[in-house]
Length: 434
Image (cartoon, rainbow, N blue to C red; front, side, top):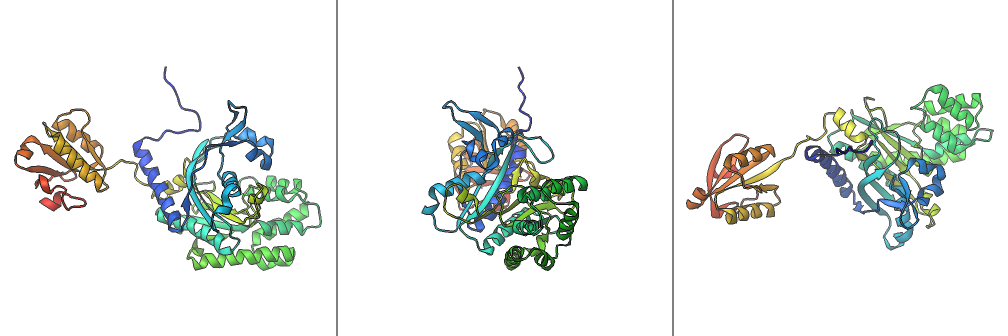
């Protein structure tokens, strides 16, 4: 019986995985340069970690079940609640700010669409314990650097920056009872739905038709001084904070990637300050590539001390970032590569094994024969795995105290003294002995 994979899940064979590994390694390398330290977290959490903040209805969007111990658990749909729990449990043991990074899979039971699968991988990057605008700016700078390190340019993407407290302050300034979170969630959907539906969502949140138009006009202008004049003290404080973050981002050299966009809201209710989302500048990838922002109240809501926090989570596999890289023509090549194939002919295994061992000790990717194949079959296999250099260790070669070094791209070959291979060469090639 043939078995098929589940909808929303993908297999990655070696050539595909090689490209995705290159993306993950690049993003993680960028994070390490900023001093983020790697953590690992469980794949399963108690359901209440999510239901206490989002309500029981969130279970419908989770891979949730009751385990053999009778506990209601779920596969993790995101990392933020988990790292909040970790900070509550042991955060006092770490110097502040705490800077963590991790890459792992997450699971959500939702409709499969462009760049969205039911299993996806994110690299989460977070700072805990700093309310300073430079922390927000560093998260934004990491995001920009991660993208440019992958080969993207300012023409390929834009980071749309906003501030939740500006939105909240404007809504509070209206002389009516407004459901602030519902209205902000409507703003988050504004680019995804028709204008009439967006306005209806604002009306459902408590704004009159005239107030809907006024609020929408305020967001469209993006004039910060005008927003302060309308919203008063609360908006003024938020604008001051936003300007401080943008100034710090400018010092870090990433302002050219930023676009002030007050219709950027981030749908999750735990965001409290500056928020941002990354978009394909051409619009070909229609959904947000990733987003992030400040969530100063979350740690306290999980029972910990007041702890400011800010983070971002690029989706590195089964997500929209690979789509952006493919659209821009900078997605890594989907192909495996091999530095050396040590080809054994006759009864030469001890020497062939020594050569392979010495090359691996230098950090190279090395394969040898595992199936007792002949010369031609081994050479064909070496070609199929994209080998750069073949080292032939044959009985005749060893009788002459030599090995044969073959450059696969040109077909050129020469001999090298067996005792001097690899010798002092860190990456010996045909050119070293020709």
